[in-house]
Length: 492
Image 1 (tube, rainbow, N blue to C red):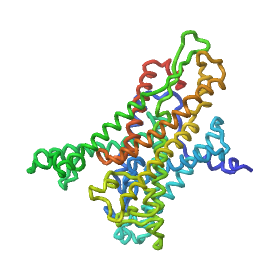
Image 2: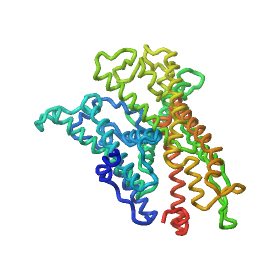
Image 3: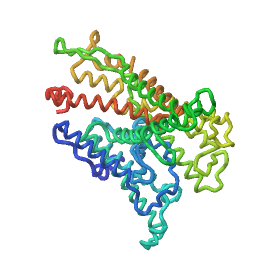
Image 4: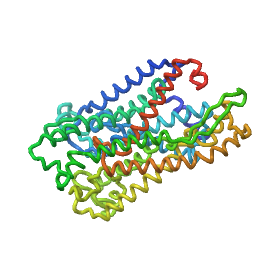
């Protein structure tokens, strides 16, 4: 008996959001999308019952804009389990170990069921150490005494709530994908990053943690004019870094501009219809052909590595120094896990700002930066290739799609193998270049800092996903105004 036959009774019965029977009007899609977004914001602002609020550490804080969760909320794990499950399935599928044909309806059901099962398992494996180690989500002893269940009973209660939040975000993603506009994962990333950027511009705090505009108001109308002088060390630092944040503003605008520009750079392969004379088109191969979504997979892999280091440090008293040593704030300051920890802010490498521990030497920062850059550039290219091959964007799948639509490349025989050879001239090279470029930009954005403390990867994702969402909304509106277009796009 094969594993598919053994697992089919379970995988085929996994809960699933039903697909719409016919065309979903554009206004209804927007309604579903807005509704899920409201629920997302609602859940990110609810603390689990029994949690000792304000205590514990948030290790995933530096990855929040990518994992789209919220520390100490029901969505503590965010989209991390979904991304991790996707990584596992992509690796297994790329090595052809699953034996599933995604063109077969039966295997499609098994693949989707397997993905849901993996997300549920990873949600439990991610939430358990966060709760039961007491390092990240400590239980409130007073709640345990009042309920008569003790601290462990409260931890079980918190775990159940965090686990339920991880499963709930899975189905919220599925609702948006089937009934809304875009994908839930992309929508949640946009929401998370937008919150940070808006807060970075407009927040005001009596404690001094002000946003960009409030900080500049204090600088301009302050009592000491030298704080704005670019000819003094203090003034230059105030302008470029905190509280002026000119460098962060420049980096944010630069990333916005470069991603929008890169999305518009493309190689257009001419197409003509084999039977309809005069019907022509173009197949665009964008510079960022695989989009920036593979960066989620790279950062999620780094986050899981660091999460493992945190668990080992908190539970293994005799952890070797070469493996990693951690500060009181829970950050690695030496050892293997330090070098594998990506640089997320400029304070982690600009030693002249005085934010780096004394035990960290400049050469250690250089090694860490080189590893992070290599990991992101090479990892971005590798995961971009996996993404293209597993999502039907490779040369072979693209050739089949062009053939099936009745189109052909002028001057070439109407044959899938011929079209595939033409596509192989562009798609693999552009995929590698685009993946490496996105990885490089993500590291550069982290090094210079951004408004709101958004990670470079998070900002890249938000801009690219928003751009694609705009294109999809424009396409939906076009098909809504011209129903015949739905038949051409196969959305009827």
